[in-house]
Image 1 (cartoon, rainbow over the protein chains, first blue to last red):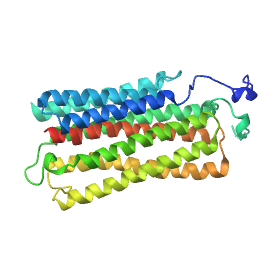
Image 2: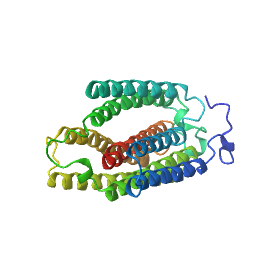
Image 3: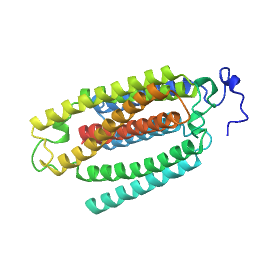
Image 4: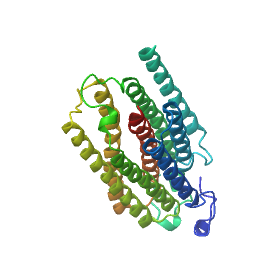
Length: 105
Length: 205
C-alpha cells in the first residue's frame, strides 16, 4: 500500500495528521465543559429541569468532540467506524427508551 | 506482513494502516466499540431507571462528594490527551515519545483507579453496599464496569509498552497502540456520561 511513498520524505511531511493543535483545543474545551457542568450543580440555584438538560447537552457536546478529534473520526476512511458506532448508539438508545418506558409508564 | 519489521526511518506514513491485518484490526475494534456502546447503554438505562429506588441506605445526594469526582474526571481527561499525544508520536515514528506518553497514560489510569477504590471503600463504610438498594446495585455495576475497563486498559497498555521495548515500532506493533488509544478515549467518553448522569444528576436529584 505504501510502496509508492518515498520514505525519505517522512521527516518533512505535513500530511493530514496536522499535529497536536486540535487535540489541545479538544482538551481545553473538554475541561471548560466539565467545569461548566460541575459549576452548574455546585453553584447554580437553577431550575432542576433546566440543569438536567444543560448537563445532558454539555456531555453530548464533549463526547462528540472527543470522538471526532481524539478518536480520529474526522479522518478519511472512517465510514465503517461511524456506521458501527451509530448502530451501537441506536441500539443503546432503544434499550434506554424501552427500560424507561417499562419502568416509568 | 512478517517481512516488514522495519526500522523507524523506513516505516510507512501511517504504520497502523500499512498492512491488511492492521486495517482489519482497527475495523474490528470499531465493531467491538459498538458492542461496548450497547453494553454501557444498557447499564446506563438500568441505572437511570433505578437511581431513585433507595428504600434504605444513603441516597446519591447524601453520598457523593463532587471534589473527588472532579479530581477523577480531570485525571482521566488528561490521560485521554496523553494517549492521543502518544498516537501523534506514533505517526511521527517517535518510539520514545510514544512510550513516554503511554507510560504517563498508564500512571494516570492507576491514579484514577486508586481514587475509585478509595471512593468505593468510603461508600461501603457509609452503608452503601452492593445489595443495599436498587440504586446501589446499578451504581456499582455501571461504575464498577467502567473501572474494570480502566484496569484492563492499564494492564493492556503496559504489556504493549513492554512489547514495544523489545520489538520497537513496526507495522505489527503500531496498530496495537493505535487501537489501545481508541480504547482509552472510549473509556474517557463513557466517563463523561458517568460523571454527568451518575454524579452530577445524582446531586441534582
